[in-house]
Length: 208
Image 1 (cartoon, rainbow, N blue to C red):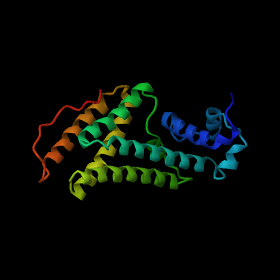
Image 2 (cartoon, rainbow, N blue to C red):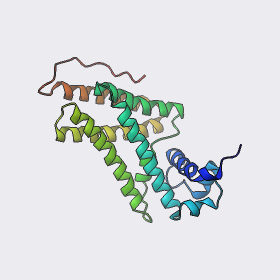
Image 3 (cartoon, rainbow, N blue to C red):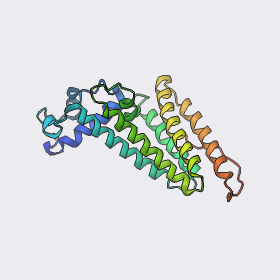
């Protein structure tokens, strides 16, 4: 059964996310999106009068919102350290399932010069800021100070994104497993040193 024309817009945005993850921003052309999504060529400027730039920008928004939902879901655990382990496991599993072919679409956009569309970099930056805010809110809920929460949140996002890039380059999960272990220990230590915290021994993160 061929795809319905009415859902061509959604398919194109979804395909753009997939292509950004696998090939990067510069290689994600309109022609490639059309081939991947099966959408009719006439739908491009009907749905995206801003062309490729608008399509990429909406893909960034979609991917950013999806990962914000993952952060929220994984960090709902009563134990934020356990939630963090799950967060890194999601990324690790995605790398393994794709045989290290796919990464983060937000990074794909952020690292491009985008001289003809500088607002794409700003959109990517806004997504990263949103993820940082989400983690900050979690850490604040568990009693960490505002400044410490923001620093830890920035570290988590930067460490996860860097680890994903390293895993793809090295074709190995070792970088993200190392990062997960260090973030686990750091967060456990930070939480155990709150004024109201009960001392508790750390544990080995379970992301396998």
